[in-house]
Length: 121
Image (cartoon, rainbow, N blue to C red):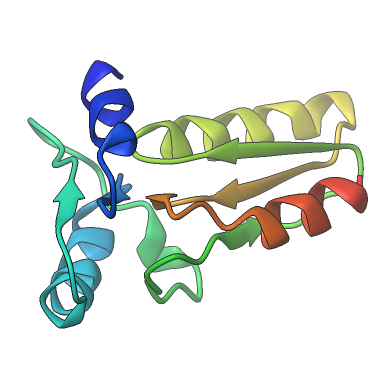
């Protein structure tokens, strides 16, 4: 987490925290096309495929609602998106309807989508 805090503090730095290999594969062309520095926090070890079961396309600066729900909104990035989806699935047994918002771009933060989705809960 210290790396994200440090990079977010740097002027004009774009910061990305991908969830899985699909996120990384889709973010690389966006990074190359972006004018200015970009920091991508890359995952280590075996990371399961998470996003390929969703209609997901990476867009620099955009958060994506992966799972809709009416009771709770989990906002996550990186490997925690996988954990958030697991928690959402587990809470179904308790009749808790959980939405999961994946925020791969940490800076600039997509506050409009975050506020819109949070207001719906």
